[in-house]
Amino acid sequence: MDLLTQSPGTHTISCLFLGFLRPYLLAFIFGRSYEKLQLSIYDIRVDKKLLFIFLIVLLHHLIFFTIEYFSFKHSLLILKYTFLTLPFTYILILIYITLLQRVKND
Image (cartoon, rainbow, N blue to C red):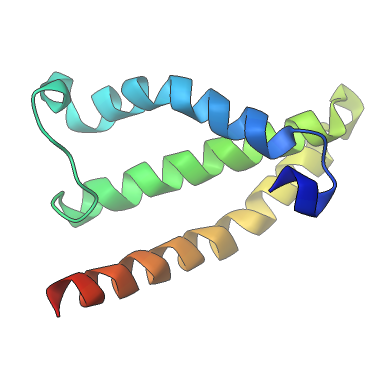
């Protein structure tokens, strides 16, 4: 992804950071019982699924744009880009998951 967008590792760093945050996000959303469960995006309740996806996308975009601009004087620009791209990415992910669920059910 970074090679296609000509960004020097920003997407990679964002995803790697989310990998480290994932256990904490799962514990926050599902409680401590998530460790005993085998979670699948298709088997969890809709409200928890939407919250998890929202937090992942929000954190990814926030980290991505922070690394891309890497300056406190661009803080408003970072927030602007984060919240402008968040709905578009969120909707695309929901459409993708919906299409996958339809294929899985067929």
